[in-house]
Image (tube, rainbow, N blue to C red; front, side):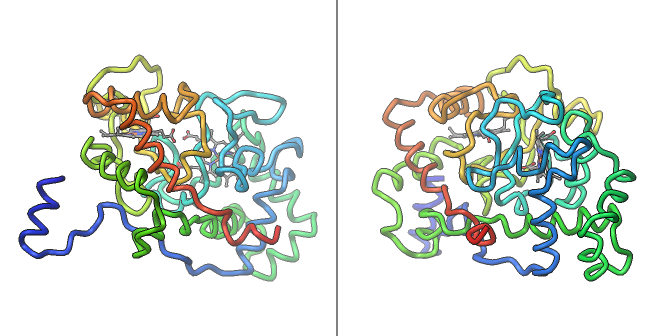
Length: 303
Ligand code: HEC
Ligand code: HEC
């Protein structure tokens, strides 16, 4: 990477960052967003009326639940760490193993997952038809309340859960003082240590699968992407997570095995890049990662 940058400078080519800033806005349908937002926060979606999407995805605080494994209806525990919904629209696939192609497809999952919301669409459609939601659905969608339309509205709302105003995005957009000297050094290390090979693009991840434990093998029962494809070569592969708002989303990894960002960075250096890393270098990388924390999404400010 360093040679590449030097070469670019020598050849007079302007060097563009392997991380690009997020768009400040995404076009959305405001009526669908309002409906999707109400649904996202409504425990009515779960079988016993106790759990909403927001129970596990706190959009005011990192977009996850801060637990190792999430808690669904009747206190049931899941077996995988909840990722953030913030900026999920920028991921190339949804879920750790990428089994959903779109946000809309993803949104159907938790509603019928027995340890999450434990409902059925058959039941939920009846509930919504006999509630004040019916009118809202009829106004927006010709067919009224259907599975397709419930998930469409939720996905439309999720498109507004973006955090494009981080110090690092402002830096990339040209404000050279938006991040500190330590954070600049951290970003240089993030590149020279090889983190950038997997965590890049506008979401600083979320655009490919890679093996959890590529240099040093990790004992792990979850076979990840293999569960979807059945391909031997996909064993222990997971979607490389976005590192946006990472300072807010402990604990880390799909198995929630690591409590602090410091441990996570040491773990990555050892298992994913296999290079020694000093205490000072880790501190700088962490400083850089803090520059990826954004403000609460605009759509949530007046809630
Ligand atoms: C009981 C907790 C719980 C509830 C309720 C819940 N989720 Fe999740 N969510 C999770 C967990 C755990 C995962 C990761 C599952 C996996 O990858 O297999 C996840 C994954 C996601 C993802 C994928 C993010 C990514 O980067 O891959 C999105 C988007 C999401 N949930 C949105 C929602 C929406 C919308 C609802 C409501 C319809 C919802 N969630 C309800 C726990 C929950
Ligand atoms: C070869 C690809 C690869 C490289 C290189 C890499 N990572 Fe990762 N990173 C991953 C994958 C895959 C995961 C998800 C692991 C899991 O939980 O299954 C991950 C997870 C993480 C997480 C936790 C994210 C979360 O939401 O729980 C952090 C933090 C992280 N990486 C930081 C780094 C840093 C810092 C470096 C450089 C020292 C680095 N990574 C290098 C692939 C990589």
